[in-house]
Image (tube, rainbow, N blue to C red):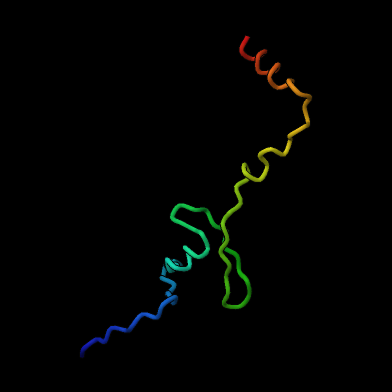
Length: 83
């Protein structure tokens, strides 16, 4: 019996026995995702999942305390640490 290789359909992938799936490069590029990015995956209904870049807590809160301390306070405090 001769096995016939099935043609791949662009954008269609298969879930493996280890629950892994390959995401097409074009979809990743369009979404602005790349290797090493942390993502959050959530169920979005029957047969649907969403993948989104995980939020970086440092970027989220950086600069949030601007204006809390009087001008020069932190410079003075840092000078005390060096003494």
